[in-house]
Length: 70
Image 1 (cartoon, rainbow, N blue to C red):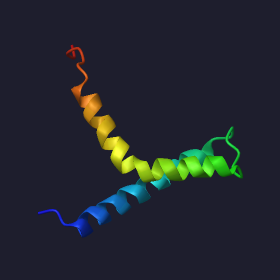
Image 2 (image 1 turned 120 degrees about the vertical axis):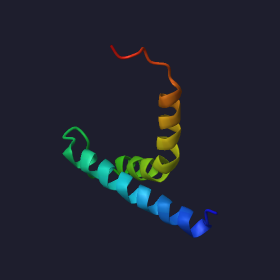
Image 3 (image 1 turned 180 degrees about the vertical axis):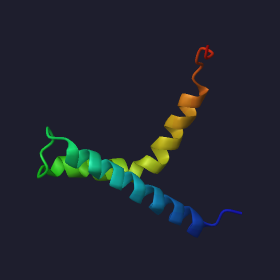
Image 4 (image 1 turned 90 degrees about the vertical axis):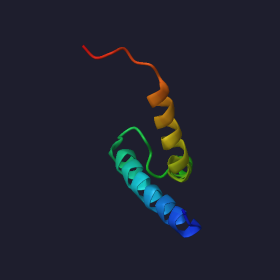
């Protein structure tokens, strides 16, 4: 059985990993202003939604038919 505490822990770990990846990409991008509030809001929203959107994207990608490798 999957308890709520395990789900919350997994969600927080995935969010922390996603946030660290997103922040490193964000800070390396020279075209993005680092002091823009909207940029940080989008970064935080992407982090909070990533444990939901990433698995859904993976399922969609796995269901997409691809030609056989030759």
